Image 1 (cartoon, rainbow, N blue to C red):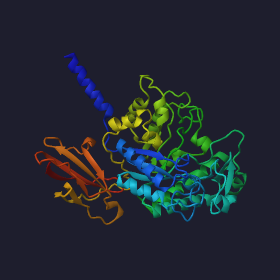
Image 2: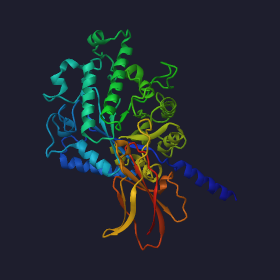
Image 3: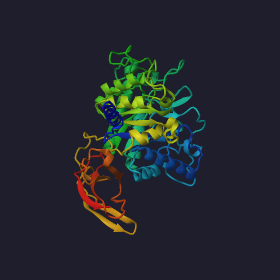
Image 4: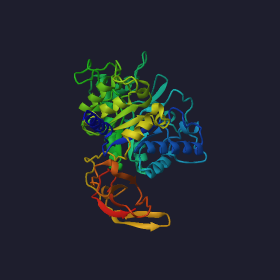
Length: 494
């Protein structure tokens, strides 16, 4: 009897430990600023990216955040900014053979039912390793709008024209490309360096708007930009999600009562980024704090920070930025025989407002560092997941799929359907969810283990053998905001 009870609790615990939500943002950052693609050439870069996307898809990822503007340049065809040196090795030089990495990534991600979010760095205009810029680069055309800091060149946040310029770049991307989101990371005002001074005395004199505190004025500059950026993107395309990935600490407790029990760099005080204001005012569509530390870190404990963000940052979808390498190199505090992936996931599942994860970074996941990807694939991301809803943008579901019918073809048995009719963007079906239930199984579409495909296609090949086993297939439609239609059922013999 004791063994039976013990077995029951083991099974119950396992099911709880690895239970999955039907909706979850599962993202990964693919960066170029580390030079991993520089001078690689078109064919090799496409091959490398395709391999990364395939592996990420296998482990369950459903969104890619792809860096397309690291230093006021472009990994896409732009009439505003020059081609990036992180693509071709020389700023302003187009790729040869010619291709457009952003458009290519959109196509490849959508084929795999992944979202593609275009990642831009707003103010950074020249990294430390850049020695030469193109004549069309903003630092060459408008040096008066730039400032130097610690061997970097930045667009000065205190100059209104720079806000307009960055928003123009965003509008250009959103208008010309079918991106699902546009994403900014944590670089607003520069990370402080001892002995360095932000050169904005003249801008403060000209544009202080009566704000007497320099820190408040700098925060005002960034706040004004974030609001303008959000409105620009949504005016161009209401369904494109605006995401921001801030540094992992908002404020320390010693700086403000609302702060976390941490002792590190602060968004609010050091980077002049008032993240909670943006979230609470609805100036972004998702927030991904970079909680890259380990559980037990003395200055910035992961457990402390995930609880803090969950408590204070729930007015918009909250995803957690996870550092794979730091997670797997540190031991679980409760069980030193394993790394911290399991413990972090347990914390994640306890959070009310956390709706997803973004992995730093994609290559570490693809390389299966510390067995991280295998654990995702076999446990935490075992079944497909729909994206979290954003009902404040659109909450109306599309019509259900039409004419669902299995047809025997030369390629085998295929289930076909037709897209629902639509009159506007909010009604348009862009993907479909296919569920399968064996005879006698409860038809519960909230259980992700029954999802066999999330696909942009209006068909799916079925695993036909002899036609002796009965199954019920259910097909639903998803619109651009991942609202799900009513179900259509079809009984099929396989």
